[in-house]
Image 1: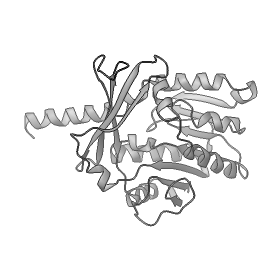
Image 2 (image 1 turned 180 degrees about the vertical axis):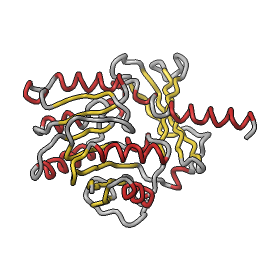
Image 3 (image 1 turned 45 degrees about the vertical axis):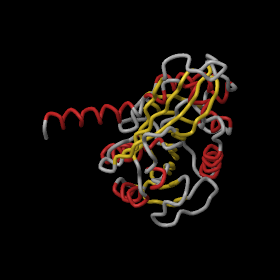
Image 4 (image 1 turned 90 degrees about the horizontal axis):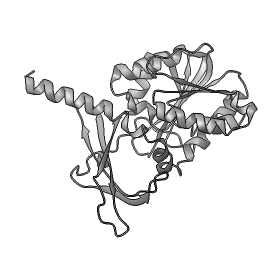
Length: 283
């Protein structure tokens, strides 16, 4: 590879890694943007209730973020360990936990760790990686390391559940030079008026989707009122056959695959769904 090739390769790697970090610095903005996303929380709460009816043990909330799933699970009476590597998101989760009753707070623990290498003292009966968290593991070895680590922290017969945003050829092929999703809103803390837009580029060689989230401060008349801020977000695209193979290679057996959070079963290798949800058992 030429020196220019090395430079572009390093830049691509740095860009991808930043895409796994930048979106999770402003926890308040993150929670505001996804405040209406409830279907996944309801699905995983139901899964946990059904699972914990028959087996004891803590639940792992992997990439727990600000506690959007962890706190509802704790309110249901579950014992939950949240794992994340973002200090800002963990701080937000701690504040949420602090508003729970004393008995429920005792059922919660937060651990700052990388999903590819963590080690807990007690084996869990259920691990959940919600809201496309697995897709921030960018290479095959990253995903396999995550699955092996999670398998090691689950009891025999424990379950792993996670969801991914499936590859949509039409959406992946959108014009990267256009801006999409224009929305005007106020930052939930600073009350700054912002115009949000986004675009993305898909790299078929790495199977990485590089998204850009733009925040343009504007005045009351919609005129620019400061420099535009850009936040990078990166997702590894995962096809159903890839997921099945990786699960099988790391000590899991797929129990069910769903085409969303309404319980509809996913047809083999189908991409015709907004969400893919997988439930696997540790064998």
